[in-house]
Image 1 (cartoon, rainbow, N blue to C red):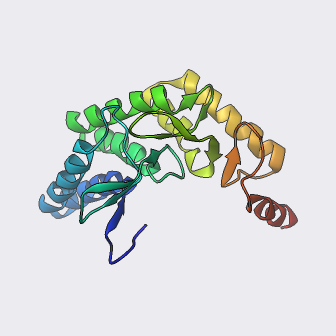
Image 2: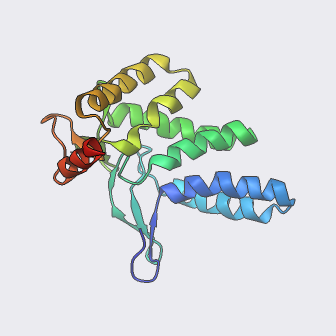
Length: 194
């Protein structure tokens, strides 16, 4: 998300950059790429809440959070978690593991509700949006990487059940009402027609 001449940054970008720039540094032999990405990652990680949760969107000119709601999917933080654990696996840096592990424990504590993961306010941990999003579908695979197979199985079953019910994994699906968020029904009809 970019606005007003790129004054906003979505948190997930820093997770993506550390893996991509780390690989680029190794391929080129130029450590500057990873060093710059690591500085950005460290800065944004230092801005997490006392709950080890991060927001979605930050104004890079003021350094203030604009969106406090966070989650593992469409809230914009999805690839932060995914790429941080992959950076640890690929590069072996304990710093990446420490960040990831702290963030993972916070996700399990504040976002998890049974097999579901809702969005929550980074400052309080209180739920903000009770919805499943298609961008959360990576989470069971990530949990499997960690060896958290029981939790991965529970989440994967819920994704699969919704897929079976509708013939597609919706962009957004409300957990309690068990319906698509406005506009998603049209998408499902189009998929089923093709």
